[in-house]
Image (cartoon, rainbow over all chains, first blue to last red; front, side, top):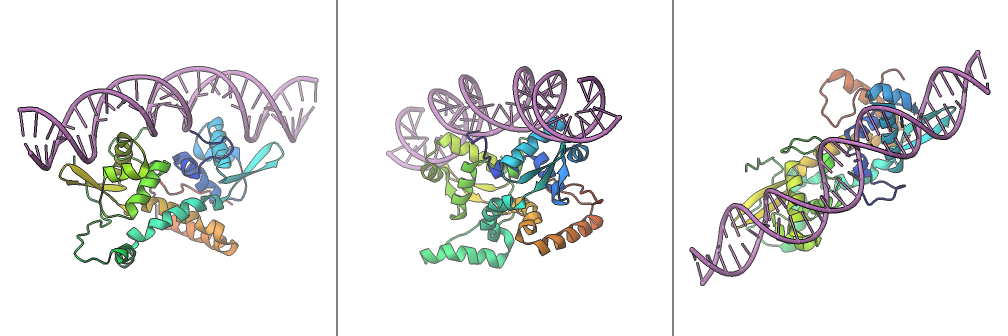
Length: 128
Length: 128
DNA sequence: TTGATATATTCCTGATATGGAATATACTCC
DNA sequence: GGAGTATATTCCATATCAGGAATATATCAA
């Protein structure tokens, strides 16, 4: 990817299920050595270290030296960009009233009636 | 990753900046033909169609035939898994007290339900 | 120092994604 | 039917990633 080696995209970082799993594990602890994560994840240590490297460059975890170990801790604030982005669309599914209100903002600009709307957040199965 | 050709991971779908852009464009409109997106994105039409295909298989957009055009609409509800996952960690950056409270909730919820969707944090070590 | 432990890094390989170009499909209009 | 428009699909080339294996680095212990 065309990313700076030092700054990875948070969205890409959390696209990996294993990395989300690591985040979930770190959320419950304060500072966890790599080996504990290796045991929990049942993944070879190099793979875990690589994932931790991605998370660190994405700003999602912090490292702390403790003797020969490296203690990783979650930096949940790094998830804020994703949260902010998602929240923009939360109103589109959160409820009928909210959705109507959201639509009203757009419709207000047009001030026209008789618009046939059908974008309900229910899943329409696109059969080929 | 080895994904079903018909069911793509939402996290992977939104990892692409262009696709997030498409989502942003669709959020403001009701049903948009591909060509409108092509104009807005300044991306060749085949690329746009491919991204739309990914979004559709991930359940984030729906298609609707309109003559020779295909009208795409945002299905924001497809973002809910991401929202739910993120919300789990929202409290970790919102405040210290909230964080303690969050841990209690999480532990309680895990004792109650064994229901685990793929994006949820997996087993947290109870010893801590 | 020697050996063991903890973690990171490098190299390799297979899988996959992206954009580009060309082509295929489907629909509309004449 | 044939031309033109709208969209999808295929093929190609490049890039990247995930995991495996081996190795490198750093620290601790005796």
